Image 1 (cartoon, rainbow, N blue to C red):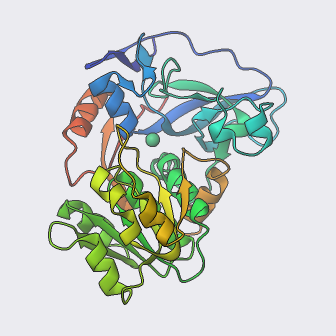
Image 2 (image 1 turned 180 degrees about the vertical axis):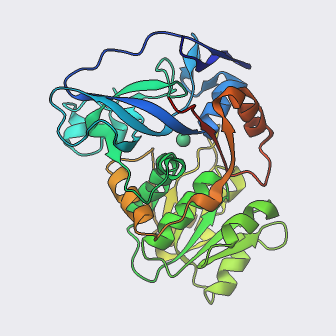
Image 3 (image 1 turned 120 degrees about the vertical axis):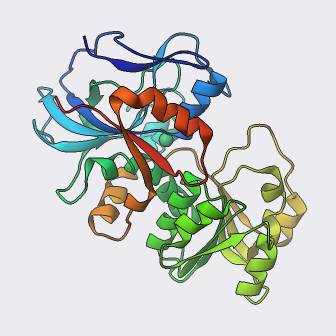
Length: 347
Ligand SMILES: [Zn+2]
């Protein structure tokens, strides 16, 4: 019997068989999963049993950052064939919904997202997925990179919302995985330079190794001082808030230039104070990001073109049999770990 990584309840993981994979409809593909990245949300469901309104009330398969190989195609599928190497967009909207018709399917209230209760995730040998949300990986893009497309798509969404102009100076507050993805997407999107601030030096060392990225350790210098120094007191054209930390959010107006943009990517656990007048006094444009829409093709194209290299952000790869250990390592949240991936056995 095929094993899945099942979150039984808060704090309790098991490798065991669970519900059968659904039938393949005319518009679906069946995929043998190959690589799955562990995301902060997977870890949070493991350690806390819930994220906001989403509560784990019954056993759920974890994982939503996946690549794999197509092993069967539905009758009406034309753009995929058996043997194609693919990655999958984990959120499936209702294609006839009002949000989908507007192209903003990420905010479709009826979206079903892998490993968001009660929907099972993809740490399982096979999934059935809509072909329309399944994307071919070019020869040059590995399964490991394919499984990085999901978190990178969030950075892509942030860079797109920012409406970057060529030569912009950006600041990313927070060097977690999504902050790093956002910094790389902002560079690829035309920024001349991207500053990344954090208080964990090992994280800054990882992202600071990329050309075009400069780091600010806020234990030594405040982000506001460093950005003022770097821009002659003017401020960053775009500030991407990726920490979700209350002091960073309160301090946003000091970081952006007059007329600049602030993109809220990080998610504070609780409501936090915001300096409205500070934002108004510079007429800052505020954008928010929730997952992504129409970013997979672009993300894959950038990776395939060699303009974005996500490989240095893969910190460890563990076999599926060790996936509980992989999760326990993710819970440790080592400063030197960006993305931990799990490899499924080749069937
Ligand atoms: Zn994720």
